Structures are given as structure tokens and as C-alpha cells.
Image (spheres, each protein chain N blue to C red):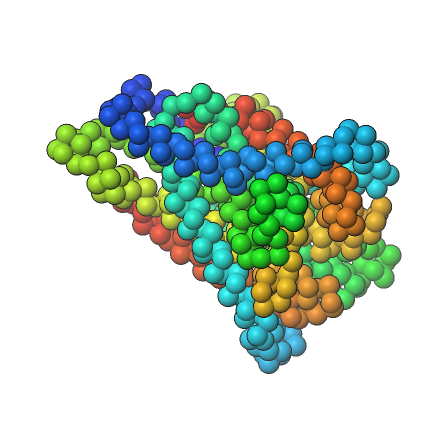
Length: 286
Length: 277
């Protein structure tokens, strides 16, 4: 993920001091780096397209027109949308608290926000089942009310929110810390309401952080597999997201179907990466 | 500060200029975090103990669980180390080398972060699976697991080292060179010590990511107990077979290892940060 904020001076003007002398060494390093990237990253990614289009365009179009694929696409879009909205609103709220609190409380909160990055997706799924499942802490009571969380949309949304919780908060908090509170205080002193202060002072300062966080959240929510696999129950055409659809097709030996859905997801991921690099403030990337 | 500005509005009582940063936001944020993150994780810990300590111990000390944990930790360590060496190398080439398409390569490094894990697994199978065009079939082997994990954890060290490398003062290297130090000596004695905190951060993150990884390995691993079954896959198996206590027990062990690594990391980071300043 991004080089954490901290602006850097542009690349040094003399790019390769003494480069000529160590030309051979430089080519060796370059070769090793490119070779590794090719074998681990680039060629495998290319293979997804190759496998999908291996039998021509027709089967790919069929796979895209498949009823279950379309449902998975739709379900993924809904889950992602809810996740992004929730994690943007609460992410900004949490960032505001994070930016203004130091000491032990701030450290604990900061650790809590980062925690989802360190928890295995399968454990996230298990945790949600234990709380919201029929035998879970809250799930039983909800089931009596006719509300099903696990093996249904709410559980999948909860999993998705858990997994992608840190991104907006972690992008926005440093920006808020940087601008400090003086301007907000000045605005409040001049009679602005909290809402006005937020809209006119705070929001303009953090909007790029929010945008960046939203892209990261979207990418993560779109692609979540492990946690969703646990809580979804794999109900074909009902609780199957795109990532589950990929797995389902693969297990059913529908190679074109699996790789077509994978290609769609890979394309969305690429879109996210490109957006990230275009919206990243210039000074932090030479 | 706030007091000074508040004094500009005499007679109106104490001003609450923080607006959205106040206690309401704190309460809201804490509630959200508790509901989404804390309570569920507490449920895992509680469930691992709720059938008694014996059940917990039996679940984590069974040969199958021990073998899965050994494999998970061992392979995560190996993968983190390989990607440390390759990550430093790639960061070096990206920062110090100039070549056309550098920004593209730089952007590509983020792909494993953005790509869904299940797609990552499929990607590796396409190249290194049964129908591999290279003739390399590592599906259902530990090598296959390692390849998938190498893909997923590739960016961590690169992204940790890159900014530090950019800020490094070149004059020190030039001074060392003019004093007759060989490139290797300069790297080991001048550059590497400066990178150490960043490298540690990257390794820790890569390791803890590999520990819990599921989506990218589940297809390529084959999940044969005692051979290619990772802890995360074992947890999944326990859940599917209706053994939540067993799943919770293994989860707690995995969480504990992850926590130790991350806490150690943040302590190391703080110490390293002090030195770098």
C-alpha cells in the first residue's frame, strides 16, 4: 500500500552517480528484479486473460451472460456499496477521534482500527458466525424475530465492513492531524455551526484522503473471499458474490467461467490501482 | 489553542469548537468498532474456552493441528524472508534505477493488494498448475502454497523500504565510495543499517499476512492433512464440519502469534524511529 504519506523530495537530479562504472551490476539487479516480478506477478496475471480467452470470445461472452454470474455481480455491487458508505462515514468519524486523541486512549483506538488487517479472513467469518449465527450471542434472538444474518446479505455486509474497516480511517487521520484544529476553531469562533465548519473547513482538507480510502475500501470489499465464504453458505444464485462464483466455477471444472469472472475482478483491481496512482498526491511519488 | 480563541467570545461561555471531533464522535466510533470488530473477536476467544480447557488443549495439540501450524509458520517465515530480499532489490531498482516504464512497474507492485485473493490463487494455478505452459506443476504441493503466498506478500517490503530509500542521503554513500569502500561494503555498512526499521516493518506485515492467508492458497494447496493443510484452511474445515470450538481454538493460536508479531513490530518501530530521527 502507499508509502505512508510523508512527502518526499523529487528524485535526485543525478540519477545514476557512477552508474557507468557499475553498469554490469546495475543490469544484474535490474534483471533479477524484473525476472522475479515477471515470474511472480506479470506472467501469472497475463495467464488469467489467456485462460479465459483460450477457446475464443464466444464462451467468454456466454460466461458473462450467465444468470449466476450476473447475480453474483449484482450482489457484489450491493455489498460493496453498503460497505463503502458505512466505512466512509465511520472511517471519517474514527479518524477525527484518532487525530485529536493522544496517549493511551489514542494508541488503543489506533491499534483497534488496524486490527482487521492482522486477522485472518477465515477467523473474521468464524467470529461473525459465533455472534450472529443461530447459536450465536445475538443471532438466536434475531432469528426469533425472523431476521437472518448468517447465510444472508447482512452477514456478508458485516464481513465486508470488518475486513475493509481500516482504510478510510487510516488515510484521513494523518491529514486531519496535519491541518490541526486552529482553522476549525477560528471558524467556530466566527459563529460557524459544526456542520458548516465540517463542510467548509475540514472536508476540503481531507477529501483526497477520503477518495483514496474509498478506492482501497472498494477494492478490498469487491475482492473479499475468506470471510464471505464462511458466512455466505454458498447458496447458488442467492448468497454468491463474484469471488465465490469464481471458486464455484473452478470447482465445477468450468474453466472459462472461472477465469472470465476472475478476469472481471482483475480488471476492477487494475482500475483501482490505476486510480490510486493517479489520485496519489504528486509529492509522495517521485 | 482553544482557550485563547474562546477568549475572543467573551460572555458566551465555553466554546466547543471541536464539533465533530467531540465526545459524540468518540462514542459513535467506539460503538461501531466494538460492534464490528471487538465483540466478534471476543466471541472467538470465548468460544475457544467455553467447552473447557481440555477441549481447547485437545484441539490445538492434535497432530493435525500441530502439523498445520508448523507448516503455516514455517512457510510464512520462508516466504517473508524471500520477499524481504526480493523486496529490497525491487525497491532499489525502482528508486535508484531509471528506465522507461518505471511508473508502470511501480503501480504494478500494488496489484497483489488490490487483486482478490481467490483470483490470485487462480492466477498462480494458471501458470504453475496442472496445465502449466511452463511445464511446472506445483498444485497440491507446499511449493504451490509458497508461490501463492509470495504473490500475495510481494508489496509489503517494497512499499516499506521505498520511501526510506528515497530519503536516504546520497552524500554519505559518495563519501564512503571516495574513501575506497566497495559497492558491497557501502550497501552492507551504509545503506542496509538505515533500511533496517523499514525492512522489519515490511517483514512483520508480510509474515502476519501470510499466517492468515486463505483465499489465494485454498485452491492451489489441495489441503491434504499433514501435507498441505494450513491453519487457516483447518479453521475453515472445522467450521464447515460443525466444530466451532475447534475452529475457535486454532483461531486463538493464530491470533496470538499475529498479535505478538505486530506488538513486537510496533515496539521495534518506535525504537528504530527514535534512532532514525
